[in-house]
Length: 489
Image (cartoon, rainbow, N blue to C red):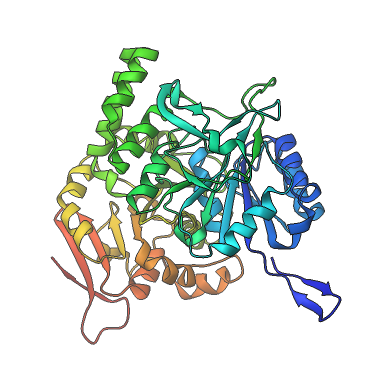
């Protein structure tokens, strides 16, 4: 994102932005367009210190192509398509993907008052080590009333608007608040505490995020000069799905993580809606937490390049295992002459996405993998090993590991014996150098007979296999070539 700019004294110098203003978008081209353009029109004095990041959460939707073209029209704007995780918590990726020390996250239909960005940068320059969450007053449509914070009161969602007299004066000193709406919030990139990666759909972050900052010994500050407007009305309707079930689940996930009282939230939702529905959602969430597959942060099914043959069978097994609602899909590339390479590339993609989200681990399940109905019980038996020992990869289902390793028949064509493979974050970087990209897949295919072979070579002494006989640690035999394993229990 750096470029050369002309300095009248020193000639060309490298541009170094200080702040990224990022927004997550879901089929709202108009909102994103006017927010991005207003950043350039109304804040020209700081244009060379500010990057713009547009995270498109539906890049294949109607707004995808126009949003993508913005990076060719608006200076210092970067377009980031994200379709493998959806919901308001996707804003976590804005902080992870920013290329500056500071990040300001705004809704894609927020406008900042003239001069507010310049004053924010002045504040940043004066407080370079600040690790607080920074917010500012919401300026209502009459351009006079402001809401400086939210009161922790239920009103459909958690929080109602409040106004502190100190926030009426843009020149007043910053002051601490309990919580605020998340139409605009920011902090140092390395101070970001993150949204829970298991949240999905809309809502649940207000209050929870602020509690996490306080738990980390930090504050939420209202900067009275940092004023912003927000488009609330949507005459064309809300473009993204926002089921109440996901919202209740998000509150349970977030509030449990932050040590907040979930009973208050549940009482509210039972009173505000159908209590029987809420009780069923809570039961489903409790079952999800108790499921042995809760060990894994992400569950990914690899689909073939074309068609979904076999998906219904696997879907039925996912239901039996109690994980159908957590599973998402990626597609393998079209490589009919080298299916083992296509499989390895798909696993690489899942690992890339897990690394991008900062996950601790991910489980990748090939469409033709046979997961026995007792996989959950076997996973539960291996739970202590996987939680307490430094594993890097784990084979689940399929065949005994030794039959899938070098000097044996390659797995290509033996789809019923494929393994599901869990990967730990400690191995992500290594695996991204070992697994094939589009550029080197031909070479990789000639040098490797299967994904399992590559993993044994890349991760010696860090592989685990779960078979019907129990948890198995794969250790290369002494004096044997890399990847020729001995098996220890």
